[in-house]
Length: 96
Image (cartoon, rainbow, N blue to C red):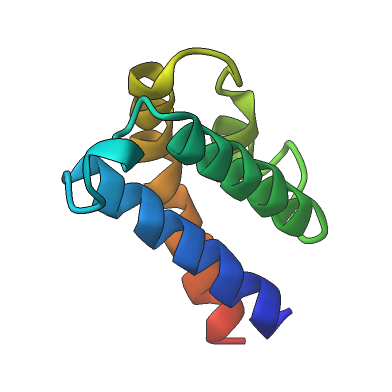
């Protein structure tokens, strides 16, 4: 699980860097690369959280309840909302 968490954290860091314009012109938030990274991060995060939480957990419900579609700008809005939940859950996992 630790390896999976590190991969998810790395993907989240890449997405954050793109949002801040630190990944160059090719990897802006509306690029296919960053959109694909978001989709991978979201799917794998949901898979991980699903093992420990269900829809009765309000944070999990909010995380999975957001739409999946949209351009990079829309997805980054979802990412902003989901990232806060992600950090809380990951901290729980890491602390045991």
